[in-house]
Length: 155
Image (tube, rainbow, N blue to C red; front, side, top):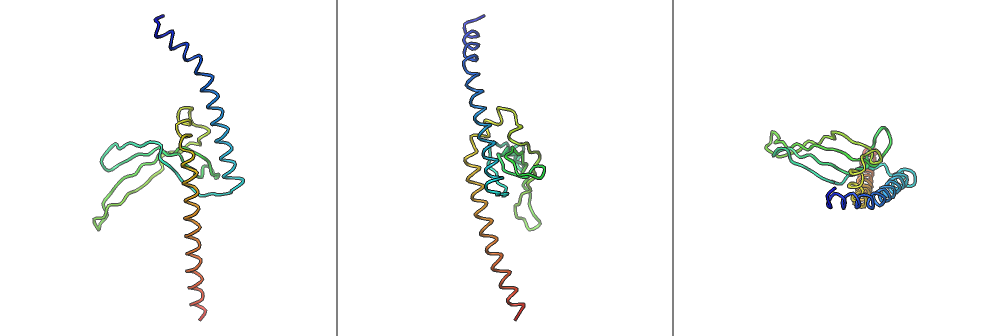
């Protein structure tokens, strides 16, 4: 064996327990965050943050997101692959179509993807809080409007 190969093998032996420990800790935190969002908060508000993206053509972009979304009837932390296609409307306005191509629960993703996504978990929690605030504001405004309409109908 060459010295470089010996050095790499020695390094792998020392790094693998550290990697396993970091992965175990990330898995524990992922489970705790999911439990917190679902059981303690019952938040049920989808949100996502980009992990990576690519642009295979000028009018199409594909995103890999860390998301909180409904999978099989239950909100989960997951990785979503989303394609965004840009198009021009009949009024010559630029619009886009978004399509979730695939989503996998974060706990079921390969270790490398899970650890890369894990780094974005704080940003996702902020995005969920912002989405909840926006939903509250929208519901409050809608409630006021409906109440005004009902009052107008009664008079």
